[in-house]
Image: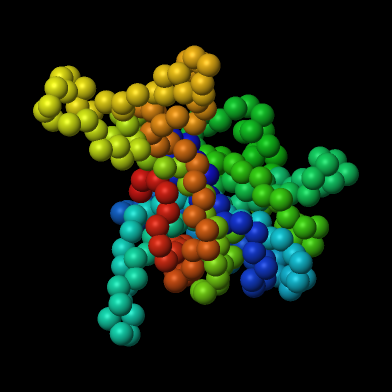
Length: 263
């Protein structure tokens, strides 16, 4: 899943587990059932779409991933009393908005769109794309490379039924931005002594290398750990197990943590 600074979106990498089906994307646990939009007039937001695509994938098929929003974390208990940390991810009105083909675009991929957006915040080109296919305006758009047998028609919905319990997925997210930080917070440096001649440099990083390298060279080597911006980077969590699939509220429960803040 990917996202802008204000919202966290995660993308699971293509998987070969289960058939490639469809229906919708992620928002916060609070207020579930409010402001729900259906991709089709008169259809329930969490019911099967009128456009149903079910096929048995080949062994080397690469399906599309999904876009989701981190709702927060919870926990579950196993039969032996072990606590399992779970990250809750919601799929908010996730649909296929465009199909890329090798002949026309040079790549085989699906463009997925999720979330909701005001008309004034969408460019005329994107608004025209959505309106021409009868789709609601989307806040997030991402392309997923797939195999030709995994292509889906425009308007097909992707729900949590796209995943199965026990499946392992890779999840991408944007970490929390911490701003400009010093070496102690950013890299875990111990800092300088509190006394013994140290004045006004207790949280400093120390020497930068000086003439390291010989022959009087004075430079800072690439990769030197120094103060700077911390966080707000895309990170991938590998092999998170799908612990539970809530089809009623379109929620995905993943064992482990996902980068970024809950929205």
